[in-house]
Length: 316
Image 1 (cartoon, rainbow, N blue to C red):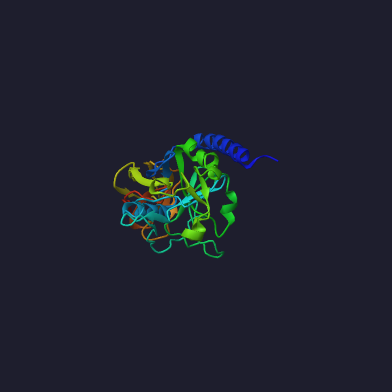
Image 2 (cartoon, one colour):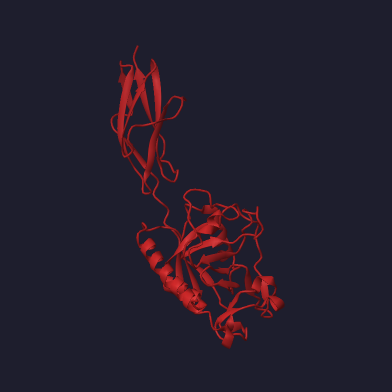
């Protein structure tokens, strides 16, 4: 039988290798960067601002309101999760207190794109009881292994960011907290004195002095630059006079986050999509008299360019 310590170390090495391979294959992300400082090292996380906006906004609100000051991890299960966001130390009397929670947020796990609970990702913790997918408040956890089974549990646990530097630090939580038998750095069951949430409490030493908690200080180190709105250019004159029953308009469009499509409508009729995106073409019927064609481009995040209008007069 493989000793638990060696098994944890093997899992950590495998998870770290797979995570490194996975992350290096990803396109660079441009979300908010936060730093989590712990006594065993610092990790930088890239948050999914655009993909999981409610979850990220909730997390940032707790940071910016000061409720994560003196925050510490209250749960560690090597190979599974390191959980925090629920408890801090009261500076008045050095007691453990719960983080004041805002109303629970909607679970964004099923909103596309879906991110799996794999090693190196951060996700929101929810009530353990089934049927409570919209119960996350202040608590979050870092995945210490492949926990993809959480994707189908209780509506899915929303992943809203990933570790981009400090994966070696994250791996330490799988290997270095195994010396509780000697009263050193380890995982302790203090549920009898502190409550049921502290049955897997990580401590640097059994004494549980203020210096022994596994603090997880979270700070914002950079916010994403606002993406450039998409643009639209139309070739030719703004006012066209013709005897033909149809008109052809051409132009170009750009978007920093990628173009979804170019759309148009004539008068107040149904919106239609142009042919092409970055270089587009419209061929549409005209009624006699004045025709107003409104055109705009849409990027992959749903942001649109200003609407441009072309007036086309079809002579009788």
